[in-house]
Structure formats: C-alpha cells, structure tokens
Amino acid sequence: MAFLEELKSSVGDALIQKHEQKIPYETDASYFQGSEPMAVVIPETVHQVSLVMKLCQKYSVPVVVRGGGTSLTGSSIPLSGFLVISMARFDRILEVKPQDRYAIVEPGVRLDTLNEKLLQLRHFYPPDPASSMAATVGGSISTNAGGLRAATYGTTRNWVLGLEVVLPNGEVVNLGGKVLKRTAGYDLTAMFVGAEGTLGIITKAILKIWPIPETKGRILAYYKDIEKVGLAISSMKEKGITPEIAEFLDRITMNSLEKARGMHFPESALYMLIVDISSTRESLQRQLDDAVRVLRQFSPTDVTVTTDPAEMARIYEARKGAYASLLSERSSATERVVIGDIVVPASSLPMALRESEEKLKEDGVRAALFGHIADGNIHANIFADTGNEDQMKKVDRFQEDFGKIALKYGGSVSAEHGIGIEKKRLLRMEIDASGNPYVMDIMKTIRKSFDPAGIMNRGKMFD
Image (tube, rainbow, N blue to C red; front, top):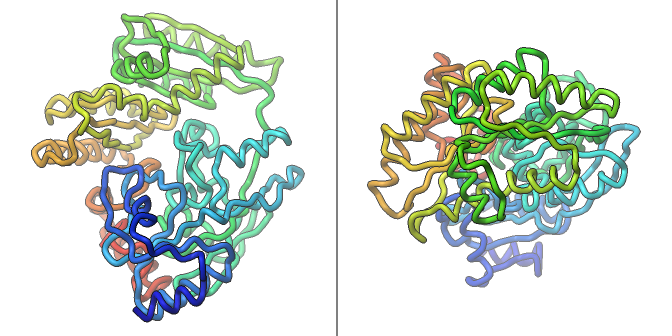
C-alpha cells in the first residue's frame, strides 16, 4: 500500500504495523471496542507529526490521536481504517516559570508527573481528573477535563494559555502565548480545548500554574437523605463558602471502598460528603467551623474534621480510586461500569439528585452515585453487561433520562467526560433543547474549515 510505504519512509521505526503491537490501541477506558488500526505511529518530533498529517491528507486516511487512553466516552478509539498517532514520546516538561505563572509542556506528560515537578516549586496545575496518574496534558485539554478541584479552579479551559498545533494539512501553528491576559482577535486557543482531536494535534501547551494553598482541612459529613446532601452544598455556597473540593459518595461506593481499600464508614450513613477548605493558617479553623455549622443544619448522622495531611491524602486517593473500586460491586465478571456525567447549577442539586435516584429505579438500572458536587457534577456509575442488549437498552434509556434532568435545570449532558461516541445523541438533544439548532451547523462549519477532508477523529462528537 503506497500510503504505508511513504509513511515508513518518513518516520522509520516510529511506525508500528505488527498485529500484536496494535492491539492495545483498539480500546480505551470506555466500554467501546474499536477496530484494529491500519498502523500506529509514535512520533518524536513536531516535524514527524507534520509529515504524517500531510500524508494522511494526501491519501484521505482518517486519524485518531492517542494520549493516556483514559477516555470514558470512546473518543480515543480507532474506527475502521484509522491510523493511530500516539503522543507517548512527547513527554517533556520544557519550562516552568513560577514568577510568570506558566509551564510549557508536551502533550504526553502525565498530569501527576507535572504536579510532582511543580510541587518542588510550591506550585500546582489545578485540573485534577480522577485518572490523573495516567491522563496526559494533551488528552485532558482535548476533553476539557475537570476533576475534584473544579469548584474552585474551574476546568482545563481556564488553565490553557497557548498551544502549538499541527493542523490536518500538516501546517504547524502557534496560538495564544505566555501572558495571563490577551485580547488579540478570535480565541483560537480555546477552540482546541474540548475538541477531542477533531481539529488538529496538540504538540505543545503553555499552561497556567498556581501557588499551592498555605494550608487546608477536610470535613467528612454523613447523611441518610440524598436531598440533604444537595441542600448542604447549595447552602454553603449561598453563604459564600467555596470549598476547594466537595465530593459525595453513596452507600454502594462506600461499600466498594471498604472492600477495595479497607476503609470504614458509619453503618447508618447512606451518603458521604467530603469537603476541603483551603486557607491561610490564621483563618483555616474559623472557615472550617463556618462550614461545619452549615453542614450540621441538615441533620448529618456524623461529622468529623481533620487537618492531618496523611489522613487527608488517604481519603483523597480513595475518592480518586472510587471508579476502580466499584468493580468489586459487580454482580458478575462480565459487568462493566458505564459512567453517566451531568452537571446542574448548585441550587438545583437537591432536586436533581432526588430525581436521578428515582429514574434509576424507574428505568430498572443499578448504579452508584457520586460526583464533584460543589460544581453540580453528578456521576451515575451504572453496572451493566455491555454484551447484553436488553441491559444496554435500559442503560441508554437512563442516560437519556439523566441528560433530561440536567437540561431541565439548565445544566449539560456532559460535564467533563466529553462526547466521543457515547454522547453524540445526547449532544444533539442538548442543542435541540436550547432552541438554537443552528449551533450544530456552526460546529460542523468550524470543523470543516479546519479539516475539509474530514480525517480528524471521524465519527466522534457528531457525524
């Protein structure tokens, strides 16, 4: 095949064609099964990426870019006839300047690796998805990843200052820059945040970084009523208390953490709320006391407070590992955990949480509820045998009902996991519900202007 011959000539040993070496690229963290890629390229330089894209444009070969493979919606799997471009060798932290509040990194850098480096300088990069151990900078930008700290610091979109991008035609462009403010025409940098690899390939990122808070404390509150969990957070925010982290877990999730991590929770508790308060040493205790007073107004069964770093780290890692821990709650080895991901305004949380529980029962679906509750993000972790057609019909019905709950309260069908393959229909539903169907046409026009041949991650986000 002429394409593969020219590709081999351009990138040499960076090209993978053996069947057994291509298998790991057929799947990601979602439940979708991709196709065997035509080939896999693991480039080392921007020049190589440019050459690859020029050849893909010439031969109309569809491309999917691979980061850490942690997508939960199938955005990083290859479909039939795809070339996979892995950014694994783009793994360098190029520059860190705390005085200017930025770091320049390549897209294959793991988020935890970046923060380990920044910790030495008493700084951090706030976007904090649960998969940060494996998730890469490029992938998190492409999905506009959020995470535990989003209530205070926002999502990835708020932390990207500039990008180097290889366009579908192989041209290399630099967007944005190193400064914290800029008003110079259209914000093309932001266009690539959340684009899921449909517009181009990120080869370098200039990220905003921030000083680590002076100190923090953690509150654990337990409730029997899911509405009271929502009311507690809504009331806290109404009174001007913005937690760095506010996470909730249901009883199923607590049970899974007891099995998988040896943790212990009060037997009477049906819901757990984790609240972090960051502050100065002088004011931390006062702010913790203020937050506890609010939480106690909603009749918790128990409330504890800790400022012990080791204890806080243990709880934090347990929460980040909750998705994996839920595998212990499967009723059979063939079940997977399919994640729903909606967001609503904080004031609507009590109603949205209650309605989500009701819909689970109505649709006959078993799921664990947890999420980043401070920013209104609710995850429904659905247990299902993805090979069972009847079960998956129920899952799809609930995902649609779950999305309708979000839209009812002015929220969104996807808070932080992107669209990929899984949520294309839900994206269409959200746009239709907005009363502005032309928005989809605008998105398609933008995509076509960057990629007239339609080779970038074809079949993802929308058809």
